[in-house]
Length: 130
Image (cartoon, rainbow, N blue to C red):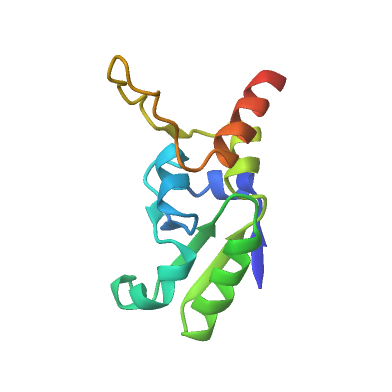
């Protein structure tokens, strides 16, 4: 399996197709601008929508799900490259990330919280260490 780091991806991005295989909530919270969100559990059923004869770059939160996705894509004849370290390393290396906009809360209601806090927590910690 071919893997590259976030800096190598940045040297080619946004000119290459980038698939983010994290869940929809995770992608909505923070993602690489222009990435396609196809959650890992939906990837097999969406193979027909992928461009043929094109190498896909695949990212997740840290690299585990993207490794599985690259294996699946390769089985079906797609060129696929794992982005090691995922969006976590992409962010740590100072590359652009699009964040969810704050949702408005109705007075008197409990504040809305994202359903996937793990990436938000990691990104907040990273912001504090920069």
